[in-house]
Image (tube, rainbow, N blue to C red; front, side, top):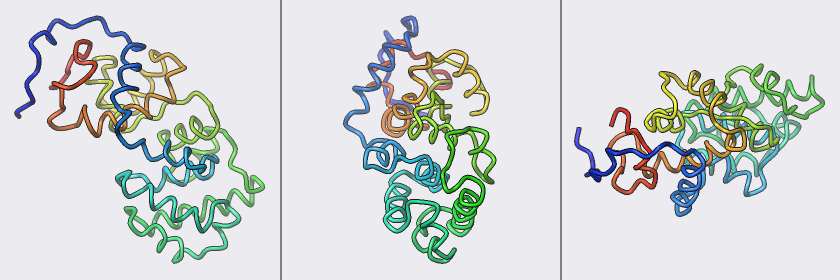
Length: 227
């Protein structure tokens, strides 16, 4: 598979400095749209419930789709109380562009209903509680905990998994193992931000196919594993 030209000096790699990498990434992604969950928080949709529901809507759906879909839903219903007043058909109509809209509509309604019955309508900032809901995994729980609750959490999606392994920073085969490896190695003050930065970086520079290594700001430290 062809790749963009790579500066020959990149083969003489500098030691990997995660602080320098994070600083370079902050500048590199500045021109690009924010990851959907962080953009929603910036627009005021930052409660644990809103963040969890928005993450569910983002599953197997591009941010460019899930972001406006989440806003459309929240304009009609932002709390568990408001969600359960909607029918499944109404929820599905609001989120129809999201993949598996029918299944997600039921999942969202069920979460809201259980929160009302068991938690007085408030989603606790608790990992075990969040992942106890059907269809909620580590990625969404950790995003909601990090963004809405400020709890140090690493959300590993396809971009975080691919890029940290491409750097050679971790050596893992699955997102689940990447999460464990990053929890052991990544400084805790970077835990929430790693997803915020690597989603736009992975979409626009360190892409899955044909990564733009020639314009990568961390090329001299990246091992380019698999490239």
